[in-house]
Length: 124
Image (cartoon, rainbow, N blue to C red; front, side, top):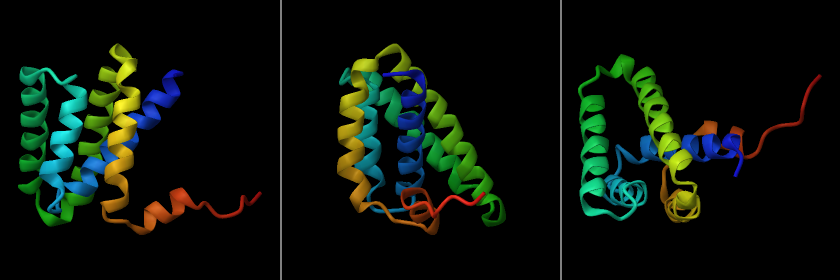
């Protein structure tokens, strides 16, 4: 898979993490993503899961008026981390796509999702 595809997948997964963080789905999403990124190795899975939880806990302390930027920062940080793992272990791409496919339908949707999934006609 070309690097651009890995970046796109990493960004999509990071976005799913941001969407899940304020829902009852968080623990499951965190566990699933950590399981893949940790390659199923218990110690690595624990490290990734702990790091994800620490990021979420930090975000919870950010004042409401700065939440949008903090969430964008979270997504950027995790996009980079996920991309780094995929770059080293491209064989995890299929597993990560499977996790994303399973969790995406149950995540909250936003108006931005509609614009991304169903872009309007090009103007020019």
